[in-house]
Length: 358
Ligand SMILES: *Cc1c(COP(=O)(O)O)cnc(C)c1O
Image 1: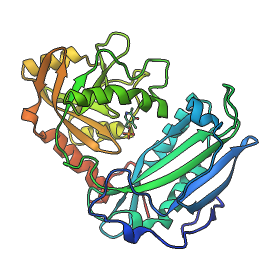
Image 2 (image 1 turned 135 degrees about the vertical axis):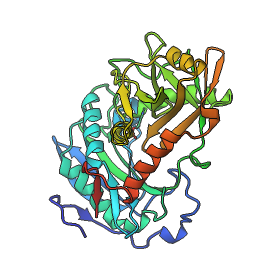
Image 3 (image 1 turned 30 degrees about the vertical axis):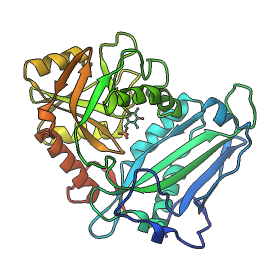
Image 4 (image 1 turned 90 degrees about the vertical axis):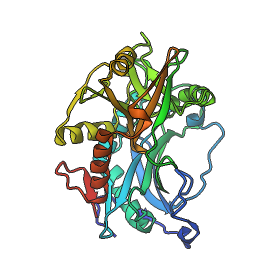
């Protein structure tokens, strides 16, 4: 058992479910490891951190979180090194973003130790659930929601925080296969001043219908444009986006309606380390369509913890279709992907303190 500053009450499961799991057939987010971490906010404090067997919870139908969506979530991953050790990737950055998201929706902040000690202890207890094969991982889902049994609209005075974990394979069953995108002029994901830069459930609820429409039209995901001018590119599906134009990596600057992805930050840093120029700036859909026309658009890809990197092979916008790099994975994305997944599994050293290895 690892030593922590937090006194966590631990109740272990009587019988592990791990023997029922086929680690060669992992669907994203469908199987959950033996234990979960939880604590409650009451009387102005986060109280009673505990690890218990994963299981159902009981709540009142009047629980405010169900009605008004006051909640926040995170997603990060733990990877296995060849020597058996576990690497939790950029946990502090995910904690910081969790805190920022909580601030935006009036959820009381949680002390860093309560968050990270619980997370590291939980994964230590469920160590054998971290897959050993490369590109597989243990997906970690911290989340919090309002628990007052009250239908009036105000900030809840009680909350529950949990961390659950799920062993996962490659996010896309086909692996790193380029996806196709379409803009959706009738819908927007987020507006400046709203909650687009916070990781809250409502953003996802709003994106599901347009995503289904895009799928029905034969595209994998929606390419989101800004809500005001419908001109600047913001995100793709639930990922950040990068373009390679004239050998320069470009990702939209954080505008207030874009979620600041940890993978986005990783890619910006790694790209520079690998000798590429990388820019954060507004980029319009017209610039991308023009770059395709004049042959300077080399690659495009989405970034996010779940998929890590997702190459884009096709974009549809305003009756025009463009194909990128013959719908094949490009050399830049491949190099960056290999570097980052190398860090995940310990084959590539990093000196930024991103890896918590134990
Ligand atoms: C979580 C998320 C991302 C990706 O963030 P990562 O920290 O890289 O996982 C991008 N866009 C949206 C809308 C998200 O919710």
